[in-house]
Amino acid sequence: MNIRNYLKHFINGEWVESTGTNTIDVINPATEEVIGRISDGTIEDLNRAVAAARAAFPSFSQTSKEERIELLNRIADEYEKRKDDIVEVVMQELGSPITISEKTHYNMGLSHFRQAAKELESFEFSERRGGALIRKEPIGVSGLITPWNFPTNQTSTKLASAFAAGCTVVLKPSEETPFAAIILAEIFEAAGVPKGVFNLVNGSGEVVGNGISSHPDIDFVSFTGSGAVGQKITENAAKTIKKVALELGGKSPLVILDDFDMVKAAQIAISNVVFNTGQVCVAASRTLVPKSKHDEFVEAVKAILPNIPYGDPQDKSNIFGPLVSEKQYNRVQGYIQKGIEEGATLVSGGPGKPEGLEKGYFVKPTVFTNVTNDMTIAQEEIFGPVMSIITYEDLDEAIEIANDTIYGLAGYVVGEDREKIEKVAMSIRAGSIRVNNAPPEMSAPFGGFKQSGIGREWGSYGIEEYLEVKSIVGIPS
Image (cartoon, rainbow, N blue to C red; front, top):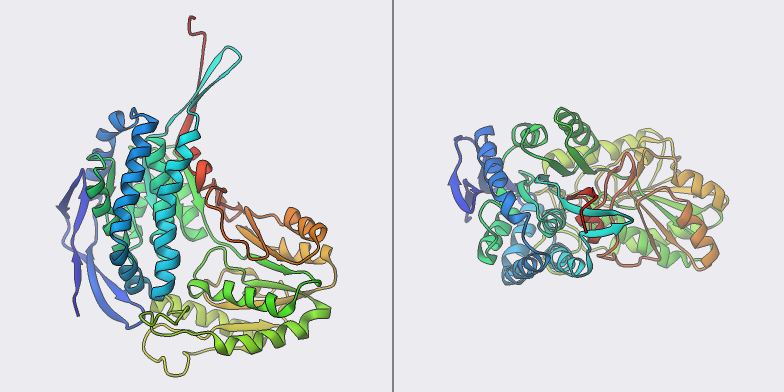
């Protein structure tokens, strides 16, 4: 097997050796084999990257909107040239089936650069209010810490917004899926991103991640990941009073109305919970079904599940691959066992690996019914293909159940009656609501209520996170 050894960091426009000697193995979750290694970055590596970003900030922050639009479009053009490479590494490092790697991971990464360029065309960085000039200025050096589950989407939305705002960055991608970020660095080189504007330091969260969130010369931290790490980042950032944006976990409800076709509802519910092998922060892991429609819905689920193609990510017919790691596999297995122990009824799936897939971190798509909202599987984020079916009597109860969670990242409604749909959509306390399986809107804000995070990404809202607001009063006319 061809081992990808990426043992350098990208700092100040150059690939440089790490000051440390330790490395981190990258595992293909479908085969459990080592497919590459990255440097385990040090604080010295991080300090060099921050210094480069700090030095580049004065000039890059003063570039015109038009210059940054041109830069973002050049990046997108170069990104398109690397399509095959991006699809391949996401398939290998994440275990994402090749079709999903192309249609979702590759395309979403590209879309954020194109969208940011489009948003800049009409974005206003200054305005007059009475006798004051209000200016929006780049916040400064931005530390970006990105997750393993969407190594293109989450990384690209942060980078595109930062560049659009005129910020310089230091990126620490997940050590489990770092290769996509390395390709991005190569794309930025080819696109002519000025030296020091983008810096990449690989390594662990304990060293590089903590270093970013506590670094006195980093002005803003944008993080996507778990709530526990988000809390730690906030604590670290508080020491220097730096701004933090967090996109954290979710336990999103899918509310099925009683006027909707239950077969279609089951298809939407299943496709949502198995997408990206359930490793999605906005996954609709709690399915709320009218009590009168429960049996019909469950029968539809039972009929659909056996036909879901999953297995080898290289097979274009598969839509469902392995979990990212042994740690994640064990985590999901623990939740499945917990659901059984707490008295939920197993509709399909269950503990262990699917038949014929003993190698790789594969799990069975699992559906529970007779779930109450106080059960562990209904309250904690599993981050795997596990659905909990919960019944409700009326819309008020459905809304109450939907909001009975510490999270508020997303919500879903399927139905026919517009008035009922609007009532549920307006009542769910979450940052984004999708109705009847509508596709994502790239210009709409993305982020959460409650413990799902702080701040917004995507579109103009994402750019705003990288800006400070200044008022100037009394300039002579």
